Length: 262
Image (cartoon, rainbow, N blue to C red):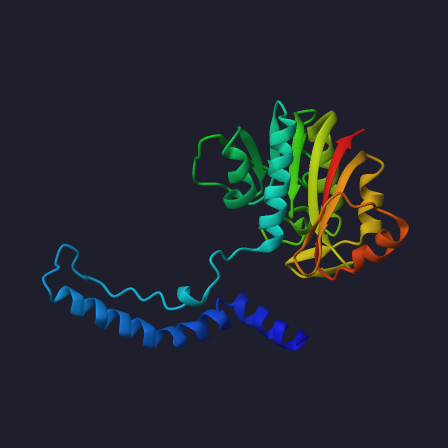
């Protein structure tokens, strides 16, 4: 099963999606049947909407009502809700999904986004700054009272997004993120958890123990949640010794911390 998953992953890397390819073939008979039926109905005099182009959508009838990446979907709603409830004066996001978390927050308040990549579009309630959070020259300090960085830190220093190769990129990034936030400010932080490793050049996966050593000198942990390998969100979980040492028995889970800067 692991071999099949790896084959699917490598095929998708080059733009080939086996499920979509298979379902598209399955959808051909229905497409032809529906097209002929629709054309037959048009022969009865309906010509307000002529068929000018054939644009087959063969996979959609077999897909779920909503296809989404569950880590992102679950964490984005969970954290956006917390920001809504806490209602900070100024919220800044570091590199989270524009079409997910940032969009959720922008629907009810202003949000500023920092990202190493450029953003060519302008949206209401979203301001943007292109910035390298690993840079030793990054000097924005005590800038906001609320900050988020969701499924981002694991990428720092791997070069995937045009950033410099840096084995300590995640540590430099974390230190720069820390200085952006005012004392007593809230930090919402998520990242993959499991057996500690790098899957190059996609991401790092952190153990809970490593993350706690990174976090605890700088932040107080207000709440902890995680998404397990079955894509179930667990809220308000205690970080006891067994859970910490096992990283909640995840292979590729997602830890979600709500933190306060000390």
